Length: 429
Ligand SMILES: CC(=O)N[C@H]1[C@@H](OP(=O)(O)OP(=O)(O)OC[C@H]2O[C@@H](n3ccc(=O)[nH]c3=O)[C@H](O)[C@@H]2O)O[C@H](CO)[C@@H](O)[C@@H]1O
Ligand SMILES: C=C(OP(=O)(O)O)C(=O)O
Image 1 (cartoon, rainbow, N blue to C red):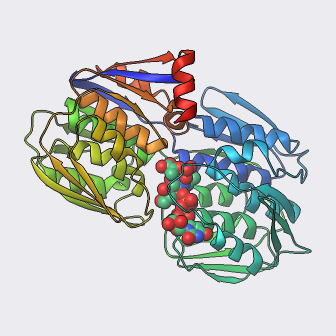
Image 2 (image 1 turned 120 degrees about the horizontal axis):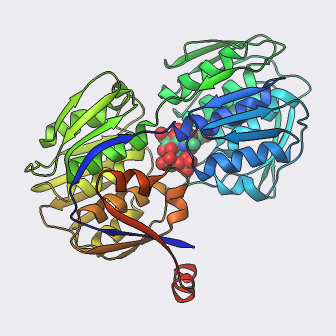
């Protein structure tokens, strides 16, 4: 077990290159199962979720090669190996093994997924979609059993706009007989990225990125090469760090349009931002920030995954800000930790009220989930003194080379192994 240490107060200056998107990568890798020849995925982020998914493909008989940021998937010898336990429990996106294996083999056994604990995260809409396509789905002892004689296209209306259900139904439907229509689909850029890969493999998909996706099933999908879109959440996290502590920071290799909701809110606070085709420039630290209210919404609204990191920045604004999460009702585990660092924050229902303007102080804190970790890293960069963050394994699920990227722009951040006393403390917390 490890911890991150940050000596706060250092101003940031320079360029941060952004990696490929976690939430695309974790769907694109299972999508490789559907092909009958080699799939090559470029611009892969070096994060633990990616490594675990590659191992899952090997568990079902595939071979994978990771060289730099390129993953090559050889799906020829894959088979419908049941995966009721083990690695599937370590991440949320293992649910994509359901759609991909159902699409390819017409059957799958997959343990219920893990991932960030943000309150209830049901997968009823995924299952509703699989059933509509003709699968029999049962839940036995924490694993989902899926079986179909054949998959037949259907019209599926999602009761909840869900990224995971939209992608999972696409994965299952691309090889179904006839036409599938997904209504009230999610519109996140990662959905377009997955549809692009599948289309390059030979799938027929129209409307990805709108709320109605039409899929005409095909018999066969072949290998292809695909480069992952930039990670808008990683980019947003660095934009927030730069707003908090940046003299002048360039966030490079991004699609600025994917970050419009964040850019608008930062500008409203008084952060100076310029954008170009593939970069944003942030001039932050010396400004007097105004408080703002944010409400998380489905894309193109403000992303829930940036809510926690944004909260840290708001401790610097002069006055009271309100952060409301309409997607997850319990995504506030970072708040207690920010309080340990001196933040004045109250949680009321789905909202956090941040009374900003006072400098945070370094403390020993715990990252309970991925973006709570990002929020604590930003808080640590801002704080007086040293902040120690445990729960680093959550941060490693989603941020590639975080310390290196921050060090390169002037942060003082390093990683240490926990001693046995600290390990005991973490295990019992
Ligand atoms: C691997 C991945 O891509 N993770 C992202 C994905 O998670 P994930 O795909 O799990 O999130 P969803 O978009 O499915 O969830 C949105 C909301 O719908 C609810 N819901 C979802 C499915 C379902 O069957 N029933 C249901 O009620 C969820 O509890 C949540 O309240 O989108 C989230 C929302 O942008 C992000 O926070 C996660 O980073
Ligand atoms: C919630 C997240 O991830 P996951 O869905 O993989 O748990 C996230 O990326 O912020």
